[in-house]
Length: 169
Image (cartoon, rainbow, N blue to C red; front, side, top):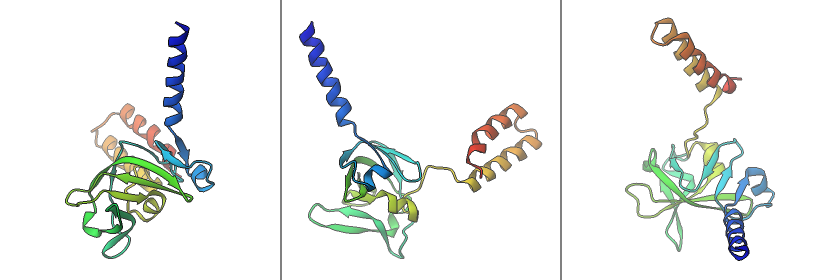
C-alpha cells in the first residue's frame, strides 16, 4: 500500500512539474525558460496548449512580421493572405526573453507557424480575445437600445451591464 502511494505521489509530482505556467514578466526576466503549457501575456490574455488562435491582419504590406512559417531548416514570413485563418497551439517555448508559440499550419499553407506572441498581439497580427473599453461601451449601448425597444428585460440588461462595466474605463 505504501509503495503504491509513493509511486502515485511521484507520478502526480511529475505531472505538476511538467505543466509549466509562465507570465510575461517571468519570461522577459528569464525566470521561466523552456516548454510552457500555460502563458499569461502582458495584456493579461491567457494562452494554453490546444487553444485556437485567429490570425489578424499583416502589419507589413505583404507579410506578417511576427508570424513565421516553420520549414524545419529555415523560416519564411507568412504571407498577408493568411489573415483570418485559424491555427491551434501545439506547444509554447520561452527563450531569449521571448515566448514563441508553435502552431498547426494555416489552411492552404504547407508549414506550421512560429508566433512571437507579444509582438503579434501588439501589432494585431493575432486577434486578441480581450474586450477593449470601447468595445464594452458599444456593447453596453447596444444592450440599452434593446432594453429601450423592449427586446430584453431590465434583469437581462443588468446582467450584461454587470459583465461589461469592468472593462469600461
